[in-house]
Amino acid sequence: MFREKIKVFDCTIRDGGLINKHDFSDHLVREVYKALSAAGVDYMEIGYKNDKKLFSPKEFGKWKFCDDEDIKKIIDGIPSKTKISCMVDVDRVDVNDIAQKKDSPVDMIRVASYVKDIDKAIYLVNNFADKGYETTVNIMAISRALDNELTEALEQLEKECKAQVIYIVDSFGALYQETTEYLVKKFKGILKSKEIGMHAHNNQQLAFANTIEAIIHDANFMDATVYGLGRGAGNCPLELLIGFLKNPKFDIRPILELISKEFVPLRGKIEWGYIIPYAITGMLDEHPKSAIALRESHKKEDYREFYESLIGEELD
Amino acid sequence: MFREKIKVFDCTIRDGGLINKHDFSDHLVREVYKALSAAGVDYMEIGYKNDKKLFSPKEFGKWKFCDDEDIKKIIDGIPSKTKISCMVDVDRVDVNDIAQKKDSPVDMIRVASYVKDIDKAIYLVNNFADKGYETTVNIMAISRALDNELTEALEQLEKECKAQVIYIVDSFGALYQETTEYLVKKFKGILKSKEIGMHAHNNQQLAFANTIEAIIHDANFMDATVYGLGRGAGNCPLELLIGFLKNPKFDIRPILELISKEFVPLRGKIEWGYIIPYAITGMLDEHPKSAIALRESHKKEDYREFYESLIGEELD
Image (tube, rainbow over all chains, first blue to last red; front, top):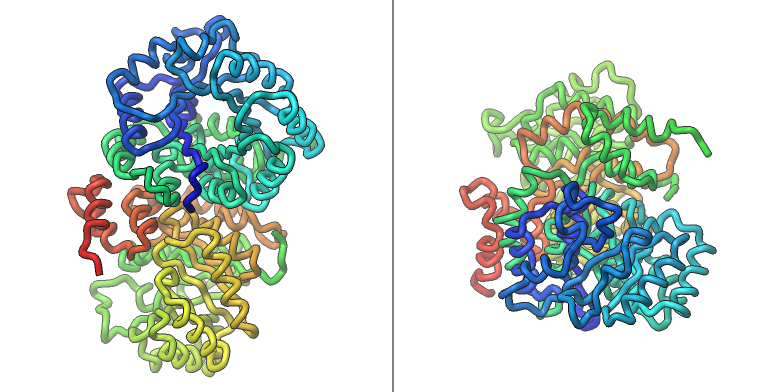
């Protein structure tokens, strides 16, 4: 699938940070940046710009805050065309913490939002866009969005928001290809002036498949992570996405080397990937938090009981 | 996706046997049969009926041969509607070893064949059908089949072969959804009197996605294995397929319990799943044998070198 406009967006350190409180070593983050740069990946998202009044730097690693100075140290001296992105969550960022683009190593800011918070997301994006950043809105928990509310949010984004890209975020790993197709077509139908992005989770081993499906229907911003690293089941594996895209600007080899040297050892230390409790929350279109709690308990392998506890919850 | 005609076909012990020389304990095989029966799975494939003149029972476990007496011991006393299947490979079976259906616990015999061996496959299938078995032909290495030769083989199968089902077998885990769609439509266009089956491998995490794709385009026999067990990267995970199908006759819970009790421990002993060298052979549309050899060597984690060795092989 060769299409010049397709951008590969790596969020290994950002989404992976949700597993370990954003506490990756500078060595690892630099190795990821080096490999992505050598591979020709378009963007690297390094973490969140959270308000330190809300979260303590004593409790979280530096990539929960992404100070510009910390980013500069990581990228210093590495030849690269890869752009740097940070994510912000609605209600968790102080816009005064965000410098003008001309004074920052950050190229893009992505705003993660639920459908219900779209007004707040538009306010943030327009603030960042006016400061000179590339911007996106990432609509989380899309598998739970009501169709009429989503329509209204997309219409508002098209009219009022300066973001270049609007993302479909399958937070629960619940989408099958048919719904992905439906959503991409719906987004494209309303967002005439914007690109569509896809951020998939791998609970049901469909992150890569849904990413391909989105590409087929003309989404152009594709999120992926090295070796699929990410919260719970993880994300679309970057190495598979690069293997699929036929654009000669990409080189898979630095990514393969990075996996051998850094990510195989990392998997011995933190858990992500195809693990049954995450598959179950995906099937049931649930947030993975119950599965995360299970994996931290002594009942981590009691899958049947976990499934029965979820389907046995009080009906609304 | 509810469609009455869809049959779920488990091949855990048969495909998994390719990892451990078919040497599963009777305990495990009985537990699998019990769980599949309780889950409402339509078929269980237990192994191969190989000619003992070609392979030594000293070197391989009993499921490389599937003597009817051994099967009877496994299923004895377990209430079940799950049918039993055995696979045979072209040139590796002595048809005289296959009893009449009325004297055997086996319900179905599946013949695995390359396109080039289709005449031999038809001969075998018709012999088994005449003995009273349900039969299929499973066309292996489909990603390497030349389109005109495949057309001819399918036309022959439609005219001359008594098999009820013809399978697409993605031996190398190389198919993307678009090619799966193409193949299912092609098969259906020629095989007017037969059902279509899908047997996917998971090298690129697309086994489940390609199975869904085949279902969407009207294939009705879907292969899967518990926890994705199978050679190399493994197969479409049965638990995901059952989670996707909305037919109330299936119950996922016995499968979840089986995974907890038997397959999580098994994974500590034998290797399968998403492992980069298998992803690489999938991307390159290669047989996984080079990846299997790598994983048994001291270079098992040297992914970049492995990739470069494959793309550096002499061009034809």
